[in-house]
Amino acid sequence: MPRYRLTVEYDGSGYNGFQAQAGQPTVQGAIETAVLAFSGESIRIAAAGRTDTGVHATGQVVQVDLDKAWPARTVVNALNAHLIHEAVSVLDCVESENDWHARFSATGRRYLYRILNRPGPPALDKGRVWHLKKALDADAMRAAAKALIGHHDFTTFRDAQCQADSPMRTLDVAEVTRAGEEIHVRFAARSFLHRQVRSMVGSLAEVGLGRWAPDDLGAALAARDRRACGPVAPATGLYLTGVRY
Image 1 (tube, rainbow, N blue to C red):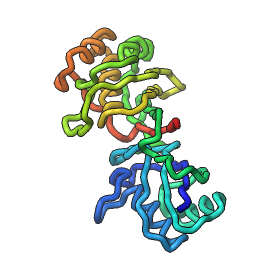
Image 2: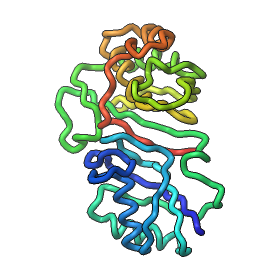
Image 3: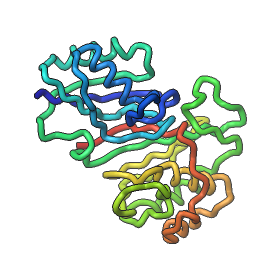
Image 4: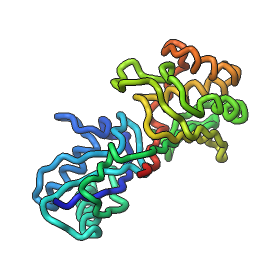
């Protein structure tokens, strides 16, 4: 049975997350419908990350198992033809070994969070950024983010509904940069807890707004208490940008 590795981009605004849900528009549902339309096969796909409602991706990785072998370029073109009315695009396809798995073989995931930091709200990027009017101190946010790097108990930044066995995670990258009118926050780790990225961004924004001192972020992390977390950033600015294998 051929196994294909797809790189997928999508605007999550109109979807109730990635994972299939009966009666709800989802990214998984859109891709599986497209697979059925071109191949005649009704299958379940797997993904590197099951993004929440409103979260976007520029580098999601999806696993597709088919009974019939197809050229990789045919898979890309056929899926995109059937996704033409969806906010989903297949960027690449390669055939993989049968012991490779989109989720369990991943050794790293990268996320970008976009904050539009200007008085005027977004028109072209509505639903794709978090808009904050007040000027953010990117230098203070950058200094605070350093406390997050390394192996920690991230209970403070873990959603109450998170089903992970352990709150321990190793954060390899936590970067804050200014790009014109935007603040970009980037994280990389093997895996993340449910809503960990949005929780960390929301707390970093408190630093940028001057409500927290940079050291307060490290204190919140050390508290290992969800109540120490700042407001959770909205889904609109979050992007899964890549997966490492």
